[in-house]
Image (cartoon, rainbow over all chains, first blue to last red; front, side):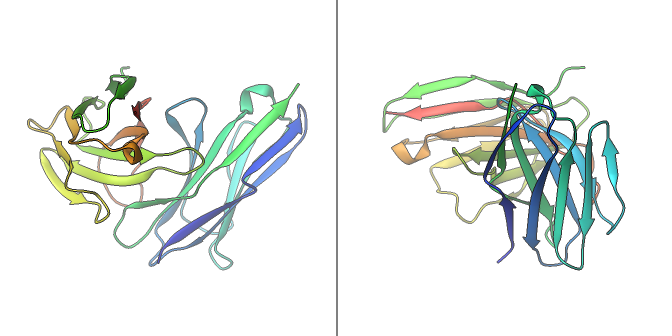
Length: 110
Length: 115
């Protein structure tokens, strides 16, 4: 059965810290992995990864995929209180439907 | 730019009542998805449409749930004879195209509470 596991489930850090969120997966015929940020209600798209070892970067956020070890990480540097959110990871497999992890709840303390 | 909109934002109902939610996708998007999310979990797939055709429905979805997208634009999700276990956030998402590069754009959801 396809599954996505995120860790940690929750994380509390201070403003300015760097955080690394993990997403491991077991998916039949892996196609892509996506990261979303969910602040209040609507998840918003961050990154899509399809190839191993190629870093995607947007401001203080970056992500990379390891298709050999079946995981991805999302890094946030110089965290700000506005980064507080749930970060969701999802993978797309052979039937093209997204399989979602439970998310990592990130709290940034001022 | 109008994103995906959902109505209502919140719904409180008594067990056994029927409820209907509406989703208006981004106008040029041909795919529309319904998900359910409970606290501490990721979105759970319910069903999706390509234009007006319902292409897939979750095997886990009770027959009390039905969705329509009559003209390939907005969609409705109806839950009949609601149960307390139906309490959740119902998220709608839309996308343009399909395949490995498909990105979903989500609405803010409808929070359902069944008393």
